[in-house]
Image 1 (cartoon, helix red, strand yellow):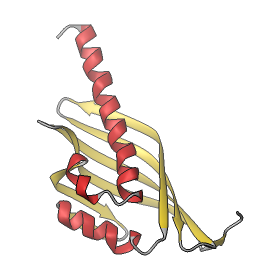
Image 2 (image 1 turned 180 degrees about the vertical axis):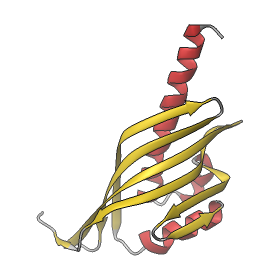
Image 3 (image 1 turned 90 degrees about the vertical axis):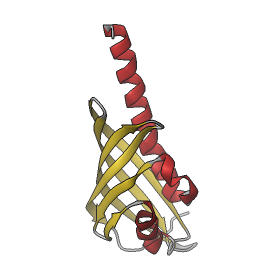
Image 4 (image 1 turned 45 degrees about the horizontal axis):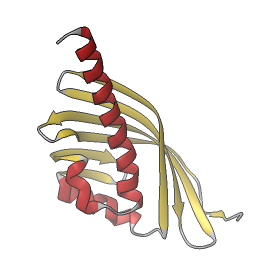
Amino acid sequence: MTSIETLIRDLADRTELADLVSRHSLWIDEGLYDQTDRLFAPDVVVKSLRGEAHGIEALIELVRARHDDYARTLHNKSNLVIDIDGETATVRAHDIAVFIIDDKTEAIAAAIHHYGARRSEDGWRFDRLEITPVTLTEALDRAL
């Protein structure tokens, strides 16, 4: 590949990986579990304080076991650092999430997400996710 083709490929890969991170937030917040295979490899491994999941079905169970308790959630990822090495990549992202408990209270959490990804015939997919918590508030009275 020429240097221009290499640059275009790198930019396209970074855009696709950043889009996957954004779609991960929507996947959780909107319960788009029927789209899990568009984000995650079939053999994905996820580790968080809530537990560990191996595979897509276990991942969905892990997420739903707690997120379904909330009236709504809103995740916002930022500060993406993307490193690509051929057919694999790592992505680091900050995650700030609002957990709406009911119409009067919510809690706020912050975490660092460490994704591993690999290129498949259908595009990039996450094959690993480790969530490192930073903080979680107690239930807060809603101001609005």
